[in-house]
Length: 327
Image (cartoon, rainbow, N blue to C red; front, top):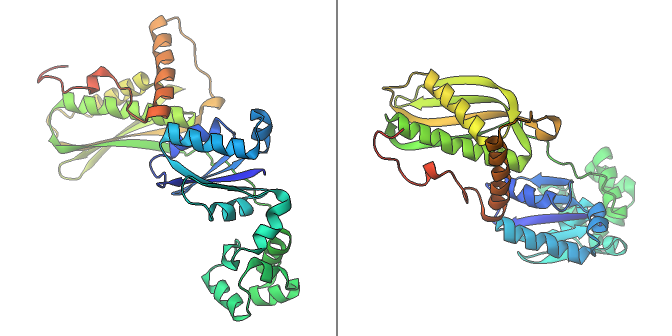
C-alpha cells in the first residue's frame, strides 16, 4: 500500500488548514481534496514510522479525530484509483486497505461507474452493451472499448480496467497566492476603539492561517466597507515577510489610521495578505528579548490551536469589551 484516501465527516470546508497541519506531520506529500478530505502518499511514511499499513491508518484516524475533531473513513491501495474505490466502501470511522496482490480482484468487482473517466452518459452507453462492472470492461479487447468510448479515452479505460494502471501522482496543493479575514459589525461602527479591536482579531486570525500553511505575508491590504456599501482600500508591502501577528496588527492599524475614518460609519473590515512560502524567506534576528519571547509564545499558540481549534488562545484585549473611551 502506497496511497491512502482520508475522507472526512463532516466535510472539512473550514477545517482544511488544521487537517493539512495534522496530515503533514505524518507525510509531507498531501493533496487536499476540497469539501472531501485528502490523498496521502505513504510509502516513505511506512518506513519512517516503522508501522504496518493498518497501524499507520490507525495513527492517521486517531490524530485527525483528536487534533482536528473530524471522523474519517480511510481507503488504501497501491494507486490513488484503488484507494478511492476502497474509501467509497467505508462508513465513517472505518478503513479498508487493499494490498497490491489483491488490487485487480477488488478492482474488477467494482461497478464500471467507479472507474475514473466513466461519467453518467458513458455508463449508460456501456450498460447497453451489458458492461456493468470493471471486470466486464477489462474482458473486452481494447479496440472494442475504443469504438465505444473513443480512441484516447478507450485506451485509458482499458489500461485502468485490465491492469489497474493509474499514473496520476499525489500532487501537494500549491500555496494560495493570498488569504484574507473579515469582520462584519452587527451595526455600522463609529467607534475607532472597536474597529482597532476588530483589526487585532483579524491580525491574530491571519497569523493562525499563516502558521498553519507555513506561509508568510509579504503585503497587507485593508479594505473598509461603509454604510452606503462603498469601499476604501489601502495596501503596503511589509519590510520583512512575516507571520508575526503584532507586526500584522501594527501595519493594519497604520493603514486604518491613514484613511482618516474619525466620523465614518464602518460596516465591515477585511485584511488580506499576499503570501510566500516561509521556507523561502529568512527572519532577521533581533537583540530584543521581548520579541523573541513573543515568537516562542506564538509557537505554543500554534500547537494549541492545532489541537483545540482556532481561538483557543487569544490576546487579553479580545477577551472582554473595553470600557468606553479606552485606548
